[in-house]
Length: 372
Image 1 (cartoon, rainbow, N blue to C red):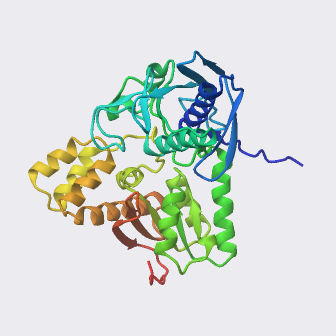
Image 2: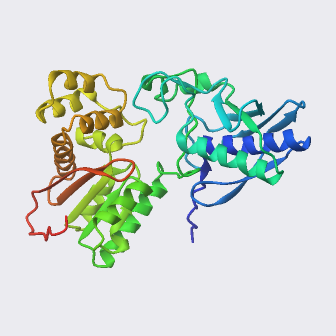
Image 3: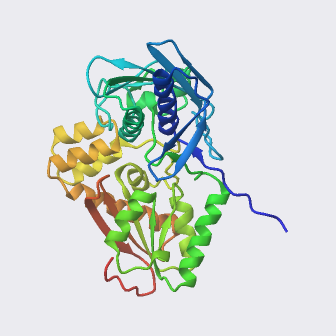
């Protein structure tokens, strides 16, 4: 009997940078070379990282970790994530990027223009690790942390960073601390299995989400549905919709955020960041349809990210835009499966505010749409 291979998770650049920082600061304080570092990642798991290097000279200390993408390696798999730590003249934890870490040059990203492309969650992880070590040794000093990635500028050419205005290297990313392998046949098989469980438990209505955060908001939106009805589809929107229809599920609610659902609205059904860029001309046309003025439409066409477009629409009070975008998602989903379903779409902000919702059907069977 063949044994199914368990997918091996990897770790984000943010986790690697945090582990390297903890090791470097410990070496700086103790004067001892470190072989490993143990950190707590955002999902609550405690993980020990082996170090690729660790050195100190009395004023600074440097440690590095090799990025492991698990069974879903991306462009940064195998990269060396380096942290150089020194004492700062002012209190607090001062984080910056060095060689191979990009710098933000356009708005619309979670990091301000001019700063190193180290995202908010990794920054928080690094601060917590530094404060933990300082507390362990009873110290109250400012600390400077510089994260670098040798060869990062070359690696970044394989990513969307240049198009997003992140210049000079890669981004330090990760909201959960781990890399979950979404782009494999085994993950698609897990989607099918989850849908089969939902059907076996009598679910005629399932809710498909792109990740853990959107699933949390989906559960708040549909509290009457059992846990089995909620399916994390990752980037596989089209595949999941087709499996829903194949299994005879009558009602499918899609819950997600601007970035990926802007692609779904265009008819892109594989929404990995590398699959297709966001079409800002398409979003500008929807903005115009929603009543946005010429200046706002032009700003949407020149935007940097879909999230930035969402911010623009909210600031302008043009909420019709989100309703139309949800309608476009529903239409694209029904086109993908050839009809026969009722499809709902809800788009949320990162902090859980619902921006828009739509429901469409062209199925033959009557479906109870209460609570959709």
